[in-house]
Amino acid sequence: MVYRVLPSSSDVDYAKLIQSIKSALEPKYTLDKVEEEDVGFGIKALKLHLRMPESSEEHSSDDVENLLNGIDGVGNVELEYFTRLGF
Image (cartoon, rainbow, N blue to C red; front, side, top):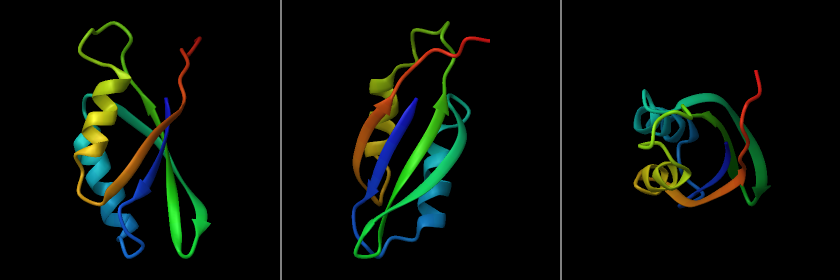
C-alpha cells in the first residue's frame, strides 16, 4: 500500500512525525520506505510504502487510515495505491 500523508501544519518536525508513524504502525504493518514530496510553502507530503499480511482479517486499509489519522501532526491521509505482492 502507498499512502500520501500531509501534516496538520507547516511547522511540523518531519523526523518526529515519521517516528510517530513507525511506532503506530509496527509491528502490525511493515513500513518499507518513506519518501518526501514537496507540496509548496515549505510543506512536504510523506509517501508511506507499507506491507501487511494478507492472511489476517485484522489487517485492512481502513485500520491503517484510522491509525494514521490518530497520530498528532497528521492532517490528511490518502490511499494512493494498493496491490498484492506477487513473489
